[in-house]
Image (cartoon, rainbow, N blue to C red):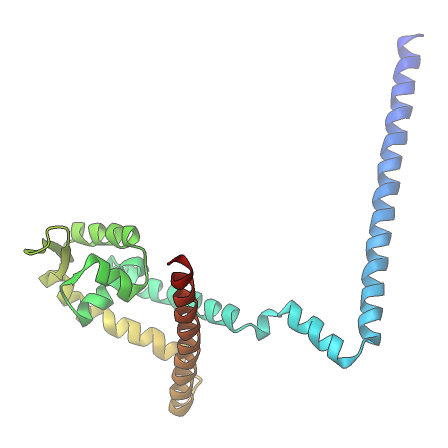
Amino acid sequence: MSAVSRDVRICLSLTNVQSGVRRSTVTSLKKSTARKKASKASLTKASPAKRRAVAEAELPFTESVGYQVRATHRALQRFLQFKIEPHGITTGMWYFLRALWHEDGLTQRELSNRVGTMEPTTLSAILVMEKKGLVRRVRNADDRRKWHIHLTPKGRAAKARLLPLAREVVDTAVQNLSRSEVAQLLKNLADVQNSLNTTLARLDGANNATVE
């Protein structure tokens, strides 16, 4: 067989393979489209209860409290970071400073509990803040394993500059709400947190009882 004939046969074979792939892809797309149409038609004919159940199972973002709270939190963090970054403060440092402004001298574990972070994360933030001259660590005289975190004069002075910026972030976030609506929003968020914390405490108690 000549080289030319062999090349022609190879080209024809490749063409047949490509055609087969295209036909297979088109067939798959047609089947997928048909299934979607059948699913929509079935849902249209379904009872109101079934349609409700499907909608609840899908949990649209617009109806998800968890998603909306997270999206709001992310927007607040981005705006806060925009405000405090020129002062050399990150949002990662901000929450620890807030806790220390409220109660200076917390231990590393207490600081972790107040902010809601793991201790290694807390330690990393403390070391950065210590390097920036915002805090200092003091070993506990009675328990040498514990370190207390104290604000330096620079760390305390930062409160006067940064808290008004945080207030501006919050005021911007609720600028389209009335005072009563803001109060109701805070109450609703507190109720959500209480519900979750109560449930988590019950689950933790059940887990501990099982382990024992």
